[in-house]
Image (cartoon, rainbow, N blue to C red; front, side, top):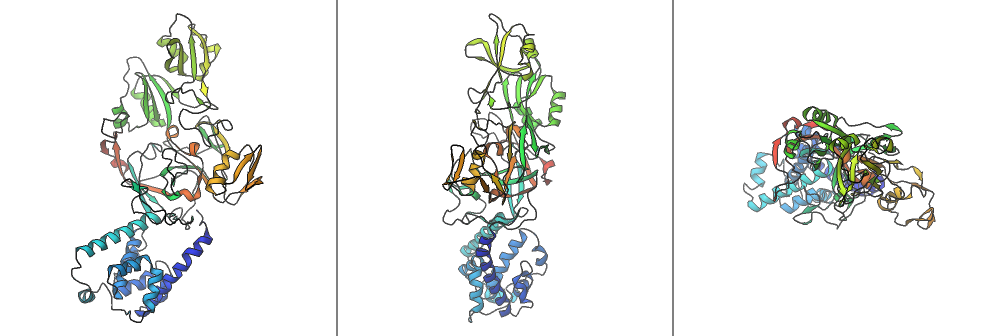
Length: 573
């Protein structure tokens, strides 16, 4: 990603950098260190620093590694404080936290002299007490851990655990990942005062302070976000936890970026199109299937699905029918392992949503049976009925999920017991509506969405009555133009008609590989660039859980099953 808010960066960071490194240069000169001028250059400034403190020359190589460089920097600062006689805990804390103030101060102070290499045995015997006391040792250890963990987590690497199945089978529930902040560019913390290793809450209270809010700033990264990259980001609209939080404290999500700024995106019958071409599909992409097993056939239990198939998204309609999220390989395995009567992919209607009277079960048709008649299992099979539920106490009217092709008089009249079959659907979903949740204007769903165009930073886009509500959230909330409204058919911003708008941010479209069980951009919209956290690199540990649909009382369903050794150190694709 490109560096953002460069003017803010120059105003805040450059003066502090110059003050720090001018002070460092003067301290090097005071200690008569060779090549003191290297103080002005990142990383290479460690070379004269190592000479000043007496650390091994091999540290220069370690300083090239992420995380190790921060540990080395911290150690060199403490060593330098000791080399100039600053042995008190508070002096060393100031040297770490406020180098732009303290380095020049020490360099200009005539009473501060260079005492020698802090790591030299003779120096430590002369100036450093053999025992500093338990309080000082604990203070040093806690301060080291706090600073190093905070900087590594903020600017370089952060561990992340996959909590849900939305990215299966690319990432599994129980996978532990390392996320790189450097690939797309480290984002400066918007709320810099926070506990390390804690994201939102600690012991029921906020783990961060609202005292300081910094503007969005990002350093250059190694790469830009490309289509189909897996990305960790702060969800822009948390529909599960609506608590208001700063951007960098919103819940972390991981999804696949399927659309980048400027892309035209559309979903038709569950198939994603980017710029009018069928988009890339992850090798292990999953879809929901409704599977009806033959009478008296073995139906897989929850334990079989979780322990043997490592599948977590499933539900039982009756004793013969289940809904389960499968990739193509698992679907073929199901066909071989079980006696199956019928399989139907659970694709939503062209517009609106399936009828869902209680927000749970979904139905696409209403079958009216002729008086004094009842449909047999064979009748249901001929009609392609996957599951059925009587409409109230009237057994002649059945709410069903069935093969759409058979909702046609020419076909269903072949089953003489059937009087009529009518389509059933509703505009709004029984769960989350498609973004932007203006169903009258945009009657979209998870499988039929758009077309839309993703905003691109610096490019003007026409704002019309037709697309106003889709871009409203970006213009008003993410880019701070609160005075935005639609008067009749004309958009207005700050009291003036708005015909075009030039976006300040790039926007991305994120979707889960488990397409029918992912709360993603289809429901909360595009992701602004200031919400991007980093790129997941690899799995460093993985645990398979039972994750029961109906957990034992007193448990969360995450009972340990086994360690997935085959996923250890597996790269994320």
